[in-house]
Length: 261
Image (cartoon, rainbow, N blue to C red; front, side):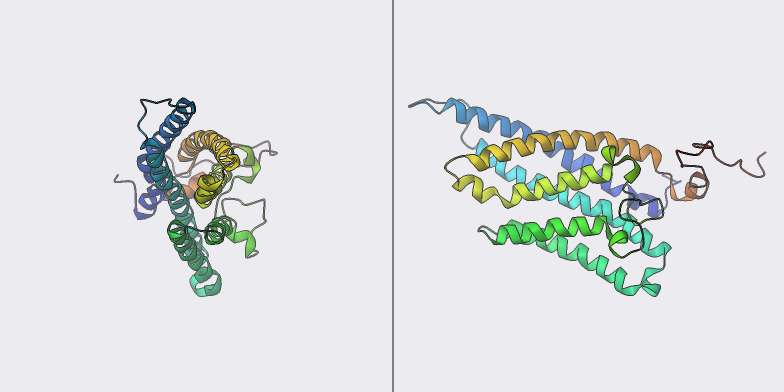
């Protein structure tokens, strides 16, 4: 802990929150989803009963809401640290105050939209606030490109958010955005699931969240990898002086340290 300053401690708030809160909820919600389905199948026949308690359905919805909020909150935490660091490094509060305050406003609007989504019960409000939450997350993720300070799909370590565009298929950022959008959609369509007598929304919900489970597994892999790759703040000058150009013959080589004993 002695090697971690406040910047490094702030950086690990996101993974700590996800590991301590979000990942346990994924297991709980997945188990309850399976039990809810099994109970529904067991009670389809006339007079059929199930040993699975009826309350499992409402508990699945309750913890599912917690999970959705945790995923969106974790995404905001993951985006906040590099955003503030980017603003400080480029002195945006003095050179580009409009951009800096707009980014902070998007954080506030996204969080407020999520809160209003929880309070909404009827369409179109669930879709409006769900859409605002989703748009806010995407805008914050691509903020440097939207303000013309970095290419859209070529963000480097100098961009606001490291999106790993050169390896987008195994990018923690893109998997995180996808998981967040899936959770927002699940939250916005809860009422539709209960009102749809054809069970179309229920089937879509099941398929979508089975896919989301795979995305969460990839998030565990890519997040662990990124923690191994991201240097501490005081190590950044040395690490970022290395060659990351895959087309270069000096790829993965670093300049020698000066004055070594």
